[in-house]
Length: 183
Image (cartoon, rainbow, N blue to C red; front, side, top):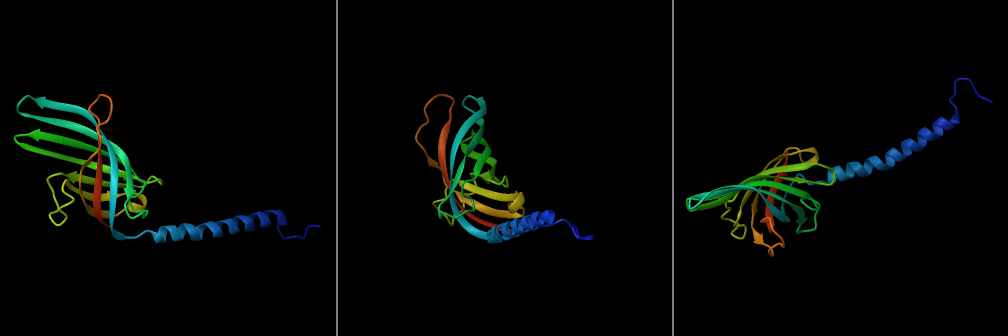
């Protein structure tokens, strides 16, 4: 028998179950979002493969080579920040007039698709960190959980064994010592 004015118990049970599931999920999602630090110093390594894309060369004068680099990151303290991210960089390698340098920009994407963007310059060396003697990244922003991120990343360049095959590909491990903040 149906009582006038009261809803059927079946939809109410379904709604209660759905509400219970949401209550179980939302606190853990909120805790994960709150658990992310807003600043820190993070050592990490990017394991890169570099691919020459195009070159401009004038014999005995200079070369400019556009490079694409792809790889993954590894946080050296086992923390989540800057760990297991997909890295992609575009760089311009200049060798002319007795000067050799590489400038470029990189993205780091995490498993959620959130991205950190940085530029880098191999002439910008942090004298206070002599082991980071290859250049400095400047973190200029990000998306998602990294929106508002900024920071500096002095880095080193560690050559890896020569890659087999043709095409001029080469590998480098790039250790970073990153100081960052999300505002």
